[in-house]
Length: 302
Image (tube, rainbow, N blue to C red; front, side):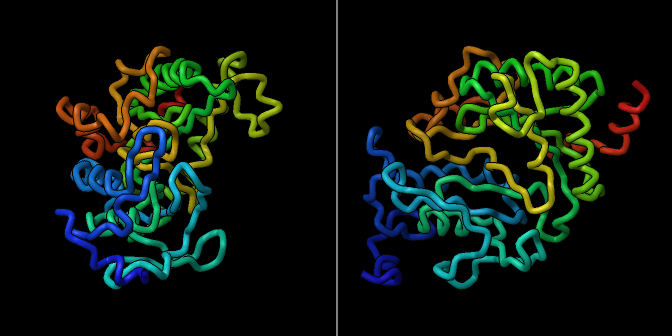
């Protein structure tokens, strides 16, 4: 069956028909490709602010948990006409990126086997001007409890600078800490700030934290990764499903929820609708944009 014929399948109550809707992506849980599409359709009002006008890097897993995944920067030729894209001179040359922001785009990506969505920290109109800083906390132990403890150290240091920060699960073993900033600084400045911050924090807590990129040299410490802030780099978007057992969701958290006892996979495709009935801890994220220059001046005065 051709791709175009598959798209003429029976309607499913979605703005974009799902090809091969019964294909099982998570065999243990029984979640299908249609379940994934329904999730993104329902969650899209929450996801939209974090993908709107952003360049996307696609993580394509056409066979779900049963197969392999691959990352794709270039907009796939299989996408239908009308999906917005943008040509960017990046680290690989010139790349035509998919631009996020519409429900239809999100569902078309599901059709291509995209489980998670990875986003740049900048908007398509000015790819070198980020509007957030991201710290990726990767526990060498593989235990989220270590990432949670490290996250609280990050929060304490940011609080000392009077900086608002927002944590989320990575959907795996790690924790992401976001700082919304006003558009203006070049990605080089944002990366420079992030590297300086994590380096200073690792020096203050040498037994628990490290900026050592080589796993063998980390000595069981949590790796503070600042490189998500570099030009053409990306991070999994809030509210994205991950290709992991139980189909966990990269979940925005309140800092009060960041504890060593938290189990990230408890927020998953099967039960996330319950989570949405509560308040959204990131609801004011973009209203809390801060001046990176002001933050850096505070650091220099410490």
